[in-house]
Image (cartoon, rainbow, N blue to C red; front, side):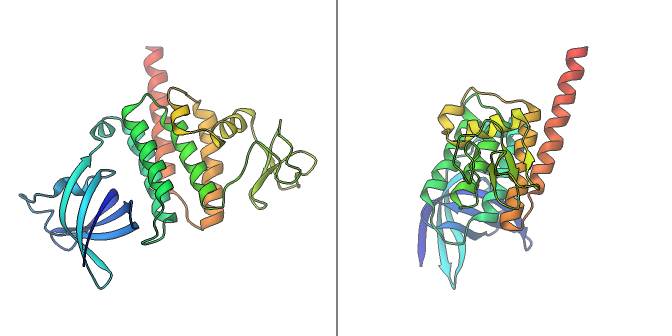
Length: 256
């Protein structure tokens, strides 16, 4: 059997001597794993099809539940992403989160569309990588049914002026309903999480957030992701290290 689908390349790993295994997020079939044969040879014609985060139209042969790429045509390689190391790392976190949550061969058109919009905004719009990543992880958790509403108390549903977050309870609470294990969110972290809760990707274009607020919000989301899935996001720690290094470099340049 042969299938044709558009898919984002979430990961490409070496396989055998000249092949690669692709982890794909496809429009029609959800997450797929496919073999791209001979792609490591010097004159391989489908080298572009294993570039991270590219959008490719694939034709694949299926046999016994295994897929092999037979044809590939690039739709968008998102080349500008390779020139912005912070955005590249942010998209890497998004890709890892998707790989850990998507089910094999389970279609999810809204999530496919949201990933595409976020990736496109990262590459072609004036966006803050920290803000876009916070939004994406928050929305991903909500879509999977694990997410937390930050603007209203999980019990009394009143709008929060100050939020107390409980990882064990999986929610934000007002002071009256917060248990002893709940931690009060810093004002800037709470404001950021509320800002992305109901925002669209379009509304975040041109907006910025501080390193401190993003670090707090992303750590909270990563902890919640770990609590719900049992899986950590090591790429997020790499991203933290990166933007802290970039921040330090910027401060040093300003001093000089």
